[in-house]
Image (cartoon, rainbow, N blue to C red):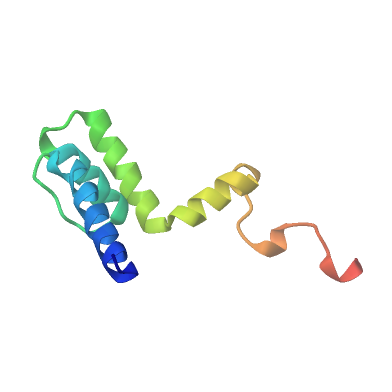
Length: 95
C-alpha cells in the first residue's frame, strides 16, 4: 500500500473517530464553546445553572486563548496582580 493511501486513510479514520463524541449534544456544546464557533444544539437553556456557568467559563477561556490562560496560571501572574511588564522589579540591563 502506498504511503499516500495510508496517510489519507489515517486522516479519514481520525475524522470519523473524532465525530463520534459529537453525536451527543452535550459534547457538541462543550466543543463549540471551547472553539468559540457560535454553534449550539439549543440545549443550553435547559441545562442546570452550574452547567451554564461552566459553559460560560469555557467560552471565556476559548476567547482569551488557551495558551494565555495556561501561561497566566503557570507563572502565577494572576495571583501577583501583574498587569504590565514594567510592574516587575527586575532590571534586565544590570545583569
